[in-house]
Length: 80
Image (tube, rainbow, N blue to C red; front, side, top):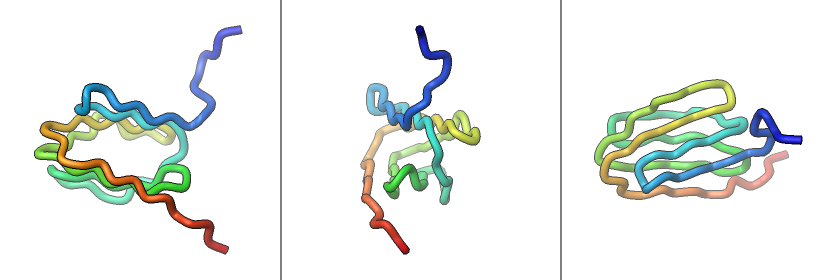
């Protein structure tokens, strides 16, 4: 049987200029040159010459970037 919807967390990066996040995330901040959010147990910071948010839904985030500078993923520890 074929899945109709993505059921597991997913991060896809296409040609270093598009990022797609599926799953539960928490949007933190954005500007023309960066975007920060928490995804699963990770804090993710994307820096580029230009960052554009195409889709911002409950469980989906799609970003386009021009001249990607860095992607930083830091695992956050479990907090009691």
